[in-house]
Every structure is written in C-alpha cells, then in structure tokens.
Length: 332
Image (cartoon, rainbow, N blue to C red; front, side, top):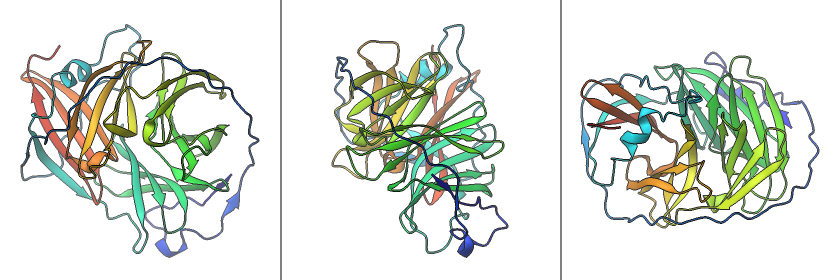
C-alpha cells in the first residue's frame, strides 16, 4: 500500500500528489462466509419534515459519552432520544462552517464523518487523483492533516469509525463484489496500518465494537454486513435489515448499538438513519426515519443531555459542515 505525504494547512495544494512513497504490500487471505438470518423492519419514505434555519455560528459541540464502551451495559442518552425521532421531527439549522481546505480543481466525494475530541474527521474519495483520504479539521474548519492512501485498484475510502487513538477506514475497489483493505490510522501520529484485506467483497464502511473488540462492515450499498476480529477472522455475516436506505456511514453507540446513515434508494435528495441492535441475533432496527439533511452521506448524530431534555445534533458534511438540532423531551 502507498501512503502519500500528509498535507498540512501550510502545504501547497498543487504538490499534494507528488513524491508518493511505497510503505508496504499486504498479502490477501481467503475467508469463508457463513449466513445468519435477519429480520427486516419496514420504513416509509414519506416527505420528511421541513428544516428550520437559525442564524448564528456553529452549534456547541455535544458532550455525550457516545464513544465510551458502556461497560455497565447502560445505553447512551442518544439511544432513548433517537427512538423518539421520526420523519416529522423538525430539525433547526444552527450553524455552518465552510470547508475551505479543499484544493481548487479537485473533485472530492465525502463519504464518512465523525466529530471526536474537538476535531472533525472526514473520509474522502478523490475522483481527480483516484485515491482515498482521511481529512482531519479543527473546530473552525482549518486543515490539520490530509492523509491520502491507495493500494493498487483499492482507492475508495468509505464510512469509518474513530475510537480511542485510532480511526478505522475501509479502502476498497470502487465496484461491488470486489475487495478492500481495512486500515487503522493512529490519529495522534498519523501512522497507517493495514489490519487485513477482504478479498471477497467491497467494504463501504466499518464500525469498531469496543465490547466485542471486533469490526462490523457493510458491503456495496450495505446489502450484507460482516463482522471480523482485528486480525481479519470472519465471525459473522447477515443481510441488511433495512430495505429503503443503503448505509454509507455508521457510528457505534453504547450499549451494543450502531446508528447508520445513507442515501435512500432511487431518491438522491433523501437520506435515512437507522438504529441497529448489535446484540440481537436478527440485528433488529430499533428506529429509523428518512431525512433530507445531507442526502445520506457524511452524517452523524450526537446527543447532549440538558435539564430541558436531550439535544440531538446532526452533522452533515458537504461544501460546508452544517449542524442541525432538535430537543427530545422526557427521553429515557
């Protein structure tokens, strides 16, 4: 795999793809796939509620313990609050940060988004150079690091997870039924390691499960889910329980849940969110709803408990990083 030189705010954009360095070549190993039954939960695609707009700077960052393991088996506040949200919930646009870090003339497609410890993380597929990126921004949108990587035909970075000191990012061939590297990036040192290679399918996104210490990934359009150890041993697979949205990015939510977002099939202006139970053998959807915010790509929802209820903040990364909020009362 080749890791391109990291780009900081001081670097000149035109030199971003120069002096590429080959770091490692990782051998592939075939893995068997076993089927696990799943239960589908239907969701309707009625027109979502309108979005209100509120002038002002970007919203305050949520302070929920979304990234803690949940060792006491208690759900994070996001779980109960999200279960009360539906397509009629009104989200108020509360802020926007321009993404001025993007080099001129480069066609970036943003795939996944995470807000973590005061920084924004965005995975990107660069159509111009045909490579994948993990971009790290400060709270005001300034560029901290732009890490680009490619492994032969594997050039498409997908949805990802940030947990502890690491970001877990898939780097796949840009076609279904292909292959992917699962990368681990140290977010302090920016060292990139290939954990393992999946040679039997495209992997469009991964989530780290800190309870099982496994990775959960989804195939092209998230039709199939896979679960692996950190060494790449396949320990489970199941079909997508959703029939209205193809997940692009998921986030782990204590305890043993994941919140997935993606584009609604056949409707580019719509996206959708589903909260999935990772403990349930059928991986049931606990709640799901369509949304027009962000179109399904590069979205995340975090929660902040307040005396008045739980404030949900939805991030949507596109030409800017936009925030939308809604307050759920008497959640949990």
